[in-house]
Length: 321
Ligand code: ACO
Image (cartoon, rainbow, N blue to C red):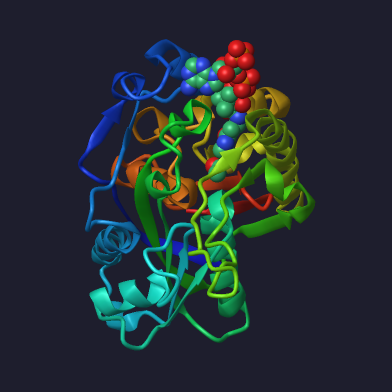
């Protein structure tokens, strides 16, 4: 049993924030950001249009392209680290907004690997014969957990959402791998509310994202090629058969290092981080949607998706478009 992606959609906020704009609030400059990361600008959400709003827009576009009604969905899995509410889940908010009355809906948290983890989870339900049609969403509003005084992180991220409608398919190619290493959690973290209450006499506080950039860089360039090799080997697929490697959009230099390790041309690594920065769980589905709408993907193409992020977590999928 495999998965077929039958529709994609994406949504990003209208507000563009350039590197020059950021240079007005922290000690940075366009040249540093471009050369170290490849990012030129990003989109930042405004009040009232948060994670679930963007996710709903992306979901509607994906459903329209798939040509099915929300009422046909059996399951909605929403990958996010920055939901609008602790509860209800973002998935339940989207379910209500699109009218997917029949679907079971829940969120998962795997940071930038979230879309891959959600896709694999839906596949497990398909494989078990429980559901046949699903909606997988990756959406994040990282702007609300970024310390806008911290130049080492605030230049990297943006907000956005991507979605894919998927259907269980008897035939085709699908191989997947996932991993987690909680012992390296401190490399990339953001605390939720602290455990304060009437007992401590303090109001719970919220944390901001912290990151050891070099640790994350080393982790990504080691783990992602290994994960890609694993799915290729399990699929009995030669690397040259892959049309595109759709990677989590974190840093252009990470792509260059991975391409070099795998001995493949950078032309096989589509990017859009120049325009959107790192939108965490949303990067892969936003890029997939752009490629799909630009006609870059044809039925039968083999592609690899790969994500990595906080947890630490990572995952890769070999699939046939
Ligand atoms: N502008 C100007 N200077 C800066 C900036 C900035 N925005 N940020 C840091 N610097 C300075 C540092 O203070 C340091 O100065 P110093 O030498 O005087 O101490 C210098 O630049 C070099 O800093 P490094 O941290 O060593 O820079 P590095 O070359 O490692 O690049 C970067 C930093 C871009 C963050 C890189 O480590 C990286 O991309 N890591 C991966 C991060 C990542 O991908 N995170 C997200 C993945 S997971 C997820 O998506 C949630």
